[in-house]
Image (spheres, rainbow, N blue to C red):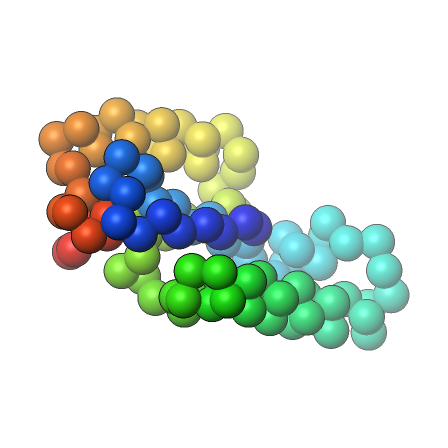
Length: 101
């Protein structure tokens, strides 16, 4: 999972893709005891990066136009993202760069 926020840039599409822990475990080639620690450490590093460089909490759903689980599969997720971006022309983000619900 990668996250980036460009608050204040209305031309950017804000998206956070999440992967369930079962899928993450399947992708790792490590001992079972190390996987949980590695996932927590990676999440902490990514959250710290977003907080340090963008001053945001990456768990704040208001930063994103869409939150989506990658457990739907790559093809399905890709179609959903492309469809959302295409429909986004009708729902341009407010000047803050973050669309409010």
